[in-house]
Image (cartoon, rainbow, N blue to C red):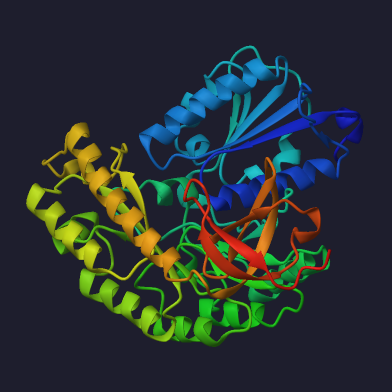
Length: 443
């Protein structure tokens, strides 16, 4: 039994690093603490509890987590600091010895945080560690973010059974597991009842949905498509070998799923893909892109790429660059390879120096800029539906079309979270978004 008196008049601050899945989980942690009377800290206020949800996808991510934890300790002196997330699961001892940390929670414990907050006394001898071995993680903990966002992030899957040679995520998140279709539809209905209009389906490897329930991802999205009140869904990153023709064809004719895909390529060289132990080749990837664009020419396709992985010679990078240039995609998300302890990639002898990684990143980012500009400009003059967001930047606000074109307009609170039909106009001043003319707005 939880002693609620421990939490009377307490405040909490929440910090999230990393992926959309982390944001969904942090939001759920916030709801759990709020139900015990713990109020979210206001700007400028000192928190009694700080919860830091960490990332560990690269060495740089680990460094940013350490910096954030130390900064938070200075901003909220005397606060009880709880650290969770992938960095906490992978390196709990390291995290526990960061100054100010009181409690380290592993992946399976993070959403059961109340069970471990029996008191809020600061620890003088390093943080307490409560974590399961990753191989024993089997629990799926539902999460959905709703922290002042127009967009909600619904966690449908967790963990990964793929062991790519460069990646530590299976060691941080555990095996693939998921919620039931029934429970996820129920959560989507709750979002609609709260007035939410857009849901992003998140997970570690969402195309692998169904491993723990015997269901399928295509049946999940069919069920979600029937939830009244939701304007649109987006599918977050989905592996190319798991985005079936059936899924693509369903999105093309669905009522609510956006023509927006985020597909990790990681390398445009079959030689490098083999070293990475990916489960597809460039021919399959090219087929998927062409399939999408054939039936949805207006679809936005974002693609993840890693540069400078071990074994990526100049010749293999050039092969990858030319392949990527040939693809009818909208944008690249470019990452520099980071050495991760315990990964199979460390056995590959040919390493890439930081300067070369930087040069290669710049080349791919230039390709991305050109492709994004081409995609946006092809839509100028067209009519689109936009969901404008809460965030205000000076006198302006922004939102996104279904196919993920960023749109800017003068701020008007009545536009927030209300679908607006617009005509897409030219670029804004810094070419970060298109301007628009509102067609159905009533003053």
